Length: 211
Image 1: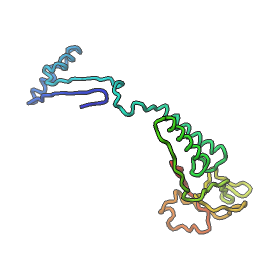
Image 2: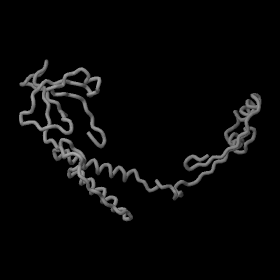
Image 3: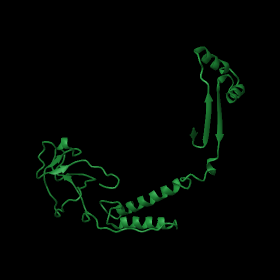
Image 4: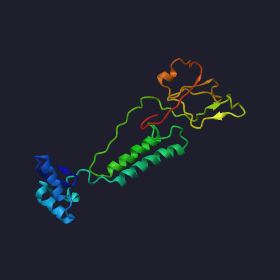
């Protein structure tokens, strides 16, 4: 049996009766610590022997993970996050390393440089057309103009309104219509609701690699 950098091997003799089991443990239960450890090592009346062989894990050169550095990995993550945040600071509504944008290209160049710095790797990249035309909205807004607590002089503005990908462009005045809230947009929440000609409001959450 092995466990990390320690190897254990044990041979144990089982008690053959309840009386013998009691004798085994009563023999050592009240021994001084040094005598207890001596009995354990020698087997004695415990009827077991345990050998512990230690090896220095730092000398094991066969471990393929020995060169992995958590600090270097975190540095790469921070660099990628910085690219995404730069997109946000530049005013991109869908900020991040989105395909077809300069921020995706910065990410590609970053990894090409990183992999190339290793020296022994042949680094290349393949170009291909994006599946859909790039959709990069310049503004999104949603205001409630009429409700129990709001009117056109005091509208309620959603701070993080985002239209689905891809959505049609409106004119500068936008669209005015009844708002219908459908929760998470599940089948049960949509069942029986008439959505025609209405602004459908639902919850959404970003996920890694997409919207």
